[in-house]
Amino acid sequence: MSASRALPFDPIQRAAELWEEHFGADSPVAAMASVTSVMRVQQILLARLDAAVAPFELTFARYEALVLLSFSRRGEMPMSKVGERLMIHPTSVTNIVRRLAGQGFVEQVPNPRDGRGTLARITPAGREAMERATKSLHAIDFGLGALEDGQHRDLFRLLHAVRSEQGDFTEGSHG
Amino acid sequence: MSASRALPFDPIQRAAELWEEHFGADSPVAAMASVTSVMRVQQILLARLDAAVAPFELTFARYEALVLLSFSRRGEMPMSKVGERLMIHPTSVTNIVRRLAGQGFVEQVPNPRDGRGTLARITPAGREAMERATKSLHAIDFGLGALEDGQHRDLFRLLHAVRSEQGDFTEGSHG
DNA sequence: CCAATATCAGGATTACTGATATGT
DNA sequence: CACATATCAGTAATCCTGATATTG
Image 1 (cartoon, rainbow over the protein chains, first blue to last red):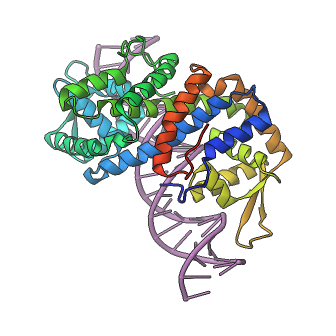
Image 2 (cartoon, rainbow over the protein chains, first blue to last red):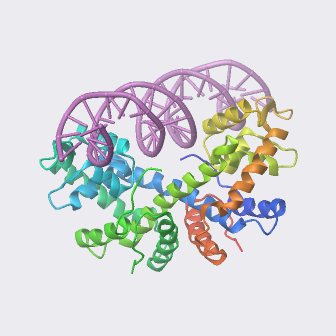
Image 3 (cartoon, each protein chain N blue to C red):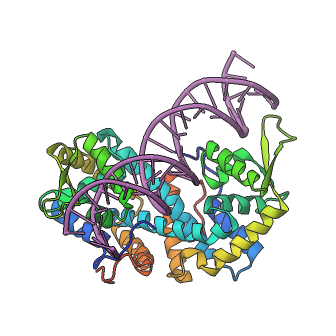
């Protein structure tokens, strides 16, 4: 999982202190510390999530695709829409779906309403794997057991502001 | 930058609602929403940071290595210590430092105090590139201009809890 | 003809495992 | 001899930029 032993200090805290010494109190030290923390926590979480779903031959990215399909009405969705919802590149969709298809977790069928398009459809085996992986993720609280529900809401709102500014979506309510 | 157009709703919010419908209010919906948000914001930030330092032929990862070296007393540090501080894999250190060396931003010299070891040492050109990249990053508030200082502290503290639980460091103060 | 929908080829980055040469 | 320090080879995952065939 990358770094091995624990340091006797918080490396991000240390970096922030040095940062302020070198670049002055005017520099966005707090932003730097936040950014670095986001990077590190993402790394930690992804490792935990991937480990949790690995027994079912899934990565977290492939798991997310299965969940998305399972939530849809017919268990199927155009490739383009999968990419839109998961916010991943079209070639990544192709890649992920092909891999899931190779595992028998989804099948790719022509879109009857658009001859150009392809639908990804979850199979019973895919639902089975998804449900088992979900239990595994529930058991570890999605890697975020360190936080309580109120803190999750705080974290979500702070990050929501960043995503909103990026223009991921047009509405601003999350309540 | 992966996804193109904005959705008329927050896809993470939507996912959380569907999640609760499918898996019940007992499931860690708040944790799921937090995790997904961390993933997405990391992606947004990394794209912004990489874009900010790209004019100087750097990635954010290589920039971080330059900053680390420039903060050290002699501008040099053993490879192993670089990996420890940046919390990246030894082979990634080799990779990053070799690339920086190819650009003339660092040089690799034998460690006089350990015949097995190699020191990465920042060059004047490396300091120059680092300082210019820093100005570029300052100008965009490290991609986190959407948050105010108080919010940065909140965000840092929430993520600090996760990092602490992971055992990245042994102390618990950050005040 | 232009736009949209995948898909593919190819390049870049990062991480990990396992093997290796060197030195403590 | 056991251990530590890089480095390398090979594998995997992801994203990106074009190019392409098909269809609307």
